[in-house]
Length: 136
Image (cartoon, rainbow, N blue to C red; front, top):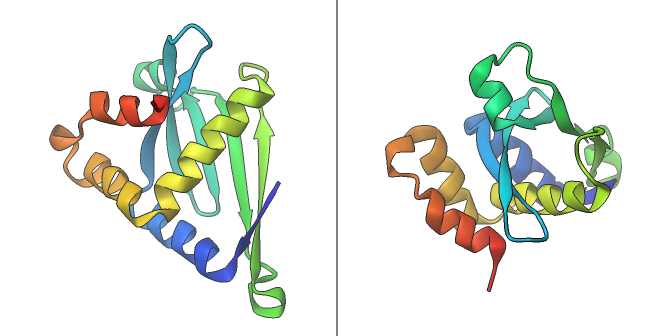
């Protein structure tokens, strides 16, 4: 679980509502990767294997679910997040995916990629994004 301040939580949920889809590469130890597709639904990020989603969106099973809870925003100025990891992901992979996803939706510079992915997908540069996620 994670705790977000009110402003960060509000940014996360507003950006997710505006741009509900994004892709998150899961980097394996040997440099190989596979992609998860993230879809925001109401208060939850559902992440599934991209190939499964492309084959049949209705039957694609979630690899990771990140639920948001805003009940404490008024009284404590904080929002809570909880991740549920499916059997197909290792815990460390789920942590890395969560960090990449949350940063993509809360960091203004990174959110530009999310916006492009949703609103101008032909302009989304996956190779540049993959290099960014892999790091130096």
